[in-house]
Length: 141
Image (cartoon, rainbow, N blue to C red):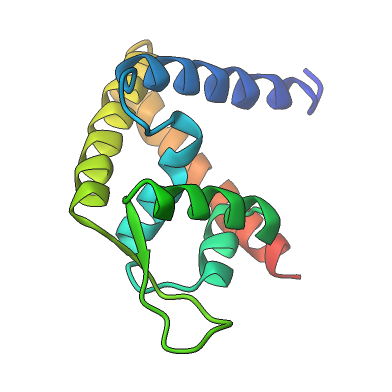
């Protein structure tokens, strides 16, 4: 097995997650691509754009575009006291989207992971935590 084999399944998982969640969000102005942002803002209310970018591992340009759309659609509000900083909070509509996103993510992940037994799930959680921690280390430098 090559290390490149590990590259395929995260992309497949993201594609499946996006497709499944977009089906559940049909008829709303909220999309799967906005889900990570709603979750990050909901879990770190008052965070700056820089903090959100770091948490999601994305560049500021992408974050600016997605957050702008979330603000325009009434999901997020920027309560910044200074012009160049941001303090992002969910609105009532944003809290609804957060709850919907979390429930849909949970259902979709359950569907993906149902092929694993408890021991395999435990190992996967530990491995995912370690990889996440390593990515945090590498991303900061």
